[in-house]
Each structure stands twice: as structure tokens, then as C-alpha cells.
Figure 1 (cartoon, rainbow, N blue to C red):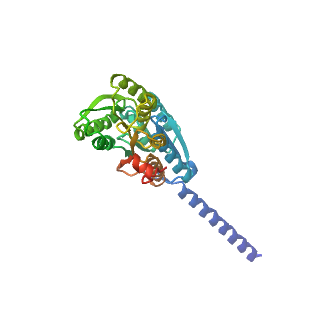
Figure 2: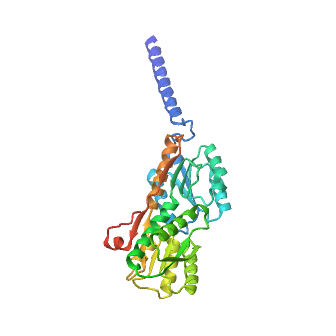
Figure 3: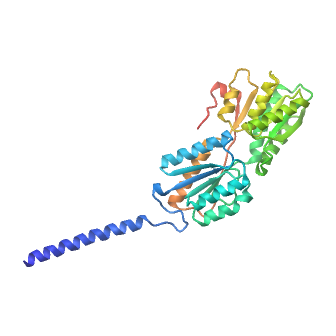
Length: 335
């Protein structure tokens, strides 16, 4: 009888030890880092992308990269289009913070307007990043050096002018800018300054903000009424450039002495460049898909491993895409 009692007691102690061990493992799995970005279950992570304007094909590529990375990592993702409205963007950010999102990527319209809500997000332990234009107080920036980007766009146009129109006394050029966004004004400056520096025979006949196809078309239609001998259109993004190109085509302007240049290397722009006898002669690629993809991966890393004390910054590297490289296969679009 005594042996049976001792055996029963031993079994009870063993079962108790097993339960204690299971409880200890559960507690460890629920721990978080002091930075508020500790390890979490994949199912617990929610990332949001608050975009300034998804009407811009460039940002559609950023969105695709961001969402593909989230899908790979098995985390939830939501993209919101702020439609170029500052008040809406602030409200969009506030809704994600209130909903307890783990990480937020922002393409800011006006970083002064969104500064406070970014601080609120960080205080709540939310990992933050920005893409394209800078939001200086986020944890990670993937940004454009606007002036350098403008120089890359302008240099490609200037080199073409010097190669093909050097004999002309006056080459009329129209710039479609994004001067409606304060942080992007330096891009237009870069375009204008490098063209004036490299091409002494250029006359800048217009510089107007029009970063959508509709506005770009409207601008060039107006310019052509005053300057029917317009030779070159240079846009600070493909969206404006697409509209400018369409205005030239609609006006039956073609030939070896006409050209359109822009930046972003969107699918729409590349398609127009491939058309027979197209005067769309160049763009510049920043690889936006890569930016969205890498930004999402970094935010997820922050959430799982902890947010670094120091801000991390990646600068886009502009890659010129002349039509010759596109047609020959030397340049291959990615993402």
C-alpha cells in the first residue's frame, strides 16, 4: 500500500513540473523590448502606408513593393490615398494610430503638418518611416535628394539638346514642375539650373506646376499657343510628362528636333517611349518598387527586434533611362 502512495505522489509532482515549464515558455513569448518594438507574432503585426497621391503611377509601384513585402512576411497591410489633401493625410495618420497599427510608412505632403501625429505614433511604440519626400522625425527615411534628382532629369535633356540642337540659335524649353509641393521645388530648380548651365542656346519659356497627366497636358497646350516652335518639354515626374507628351502629339508635333523628358520610369512612360518615332526620349528610374519593399521589410524588423535609437536614411540613386537603352534591352524595368 505504501508503495502505491509513493508512486502516486511521484506522478503528481512530475505532472506539476510539466505545467510549470509550459507556463514559463508562454511568459517569455509575450515579452517586448523597451523601445516598444519588440518581438510579435506575425498575425499581430499591421502595417499602414499613407500615400500622398495614388493617382501618380510612381507611388503605385511603391505601394506594390510595400504590399508584396508584407505578404511575404505574413503581416496585415493597409494603403490609404490622401489624395494630395494635407488635412486628410493628418486624419489618415490619426486613424492608423488610434487603430493600433504596428508600423506606418508616410509619403508626406507637408511634413510640418504631420510632425505632431508622427510624434504621437512614436510615443505609442509605432515604428515609423517615410518614402520619397522627407518626414524628418520618423525612425527611418527612404528619400529623394530632390535637387540631385532634378539635375539627373535635366542633364539627360541637356545632353540631348547639345547633341541634336546645338546648331539652333534658340531652343525653347518648357518645364512642368511640382512647385505645388514645397519639398519638391528643389527638383524643378535642379532641372532648370543644369539645363541653363549646359545649354547656352536654351530659352526657358515656361515653368509651371502640373504633376498629373491632365495638368501637364493643359500646361503644354497653353505654352504651344504662345510658342508653337517649342522644342523640348522637361517634366519633374512622368505624370506631368505624360500630359505634356500627349499635348505635343495632339498638336501633331514630331520629328528629330522635338523631345520630351521626365523622371520616374513608370510603365505608362516606358510604353510611350517604345512607340514608333516617339518624341518621348528619356526618363529617370528611382526604382520605387524597391523602396516600398525595403521600407516594409525594415519596419517589420523594427517591430520584431526593436526600433534603433538612431534614425536610418537611404537616398534614392537616380538611373537615367534614355530611349536607346530601353529599346536595346540594356535597361530592364524592375518591379
